[in-house]
View: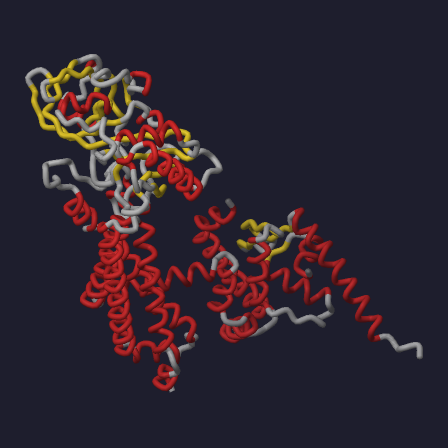
Length: 477
Length: 98
């Protein structure tokens, strides 16, 4: 804490030093006068023997300063003053940079939210999707799912779910809701916990229409049940079939889809009761997404081999499975090489990077033009003793400040762009979303902005470096 | 080292320090008066000396420096190093046996 004390007592220290030097000179003059010198001559001699008072005071003060930090601080202050004096230049530079950074932040945030970020479930790394191997068809039939789940040893648990729409009525309220019909082990395999109440389990299923239970999503419960904590045990009608509310999912759990936010979950065995479609008995009715948790030590490749061996066996047992193959891959667009969203996003990211590069090149030109305009000022600074490194540092400080402001301004409109791009109803009114549960998906990522700002700053470094050839020296000379 | 050694003998203010070093060295050492103060500031910063405003015998307000325990330790270390160096120089400068 010594440095902190020094920081606050510095003014007193400087004052003491100055007073002390004056006392020294006074004492010296008195001594010289006492030796017979005239006061004027004594004063002159004392000063001559003492040396440059201002210079000595400055040397004394240096003991209490951090020269490097303070010179950087003075560079920053000077740079801010210079930018304030040229508002047109500063605004142009910041907006140029903000445009490039903003575009990149939006695209990379969407990319992160949709593709890079794993599902919002515990241990997402061990969760894989089982798709068809040959045609990359993403869904499976319920009968195939049962065989995969019960006969393949690679997975510690395997779940299936389908999409459904139903009219929900609770009391006098009636709404249209989108949800999932899920296998009984859905929540157990995912390892999620309810906000309150409980989830249904595999043991609750005892054949068709045997488990009339419903779990509500947190947002659906808040919106349509006014966050009523006594909702448990209430009966909700789904297409006029009664279901008992047994739990409410946590706020951050919206299912395992990237673009779909489920309002509710019901057991798969009760799906046909609500929708009227008989999906479960048919091997060639591919209506369900299948996810499984790989056992520790089992790789997706090993699981794929194992499932394919099983699929061949299943094809022998039932001709409808003839040609059936399986592939184990990451769920969602992350694992789907053919996913159009992923392809489009990567293309847009490439464009955004090009925009950023163009912004950087533009910015470098603007800075170089400005530095040329300041040739006179820089020449004077060189002439009165500034080193080339000091000049370079000053210019780079300005670039850093512009980069920081650009990085701060750039991402600011991006949440609006992001939200307007991602939160809209789907073709059939389904709640489309980009998994807004985590801030990382719905807000711009500051590290992206920082990376972009760094790249622009580096381009500036390049422009200064290429410009900083001895032209100033020629001016100074 | 000379400053610390002088202050170990007795607390002094800046001007007195200069006079003391001149006298003790029989005017062989001409201390640059101005250079004394930056050195004293560094010693103050490193807590080797401490300073207080006092009234001198000639009724002047002067800033008197005193050596601290850390300063004493530093002085001993410096003197020891200097003696070693001097010994080495003497050995090098002494006439060779052969």
